[in-house]
Length: 212
Image 1 (tube, helix red, strand yellow):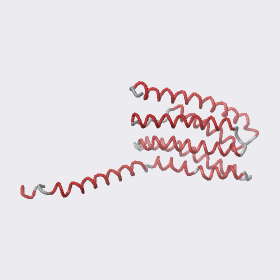
Image 2: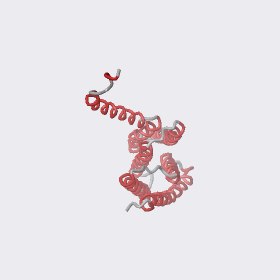
Image 3: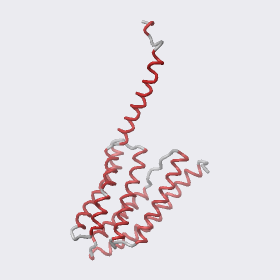
Image 4: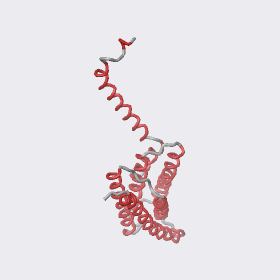
């Protein structure tokens, strides 16, 4: 039996086993990336196209349709995180994808609503500026510390306030004007607070851990 033990075979099989290992790891990575929660995040990104087109179309019936699409997008934002935790599918890819999907949806919808005359330019600019700073900070942490910083509670709450304001802007109902302006100023304050929270988190990763 010992004469048949792998004496000459490691060199023949080594390359094959490594490629097989790489293949299996690659397949595993893909499977872990395309979880139900991550698919929901991707669907949120895909919803931005019809949302923007309908906002810019400016036809009478667009508001009801765009409202439905925005509510679906909000629902995917709620359920992707919930399912990731419930199914134990929290991954670094998901931690990146979820906030990226939020930013794409929010910024593109805000830009379209500015063009449609439904929200002020300064507000969309503030949203874009805050998100740009967060992206830069997250990128630095990833490149220097090899760590993906998960979204903070203040950031997720801010996204909810922004979404509420954008939805009210789409509805454009006089009876809800007071509520709309309430969320305008509430989300503006939340934008500034969440940015301060992110700065503190990034300082902890960049400074406290000795990263220059």
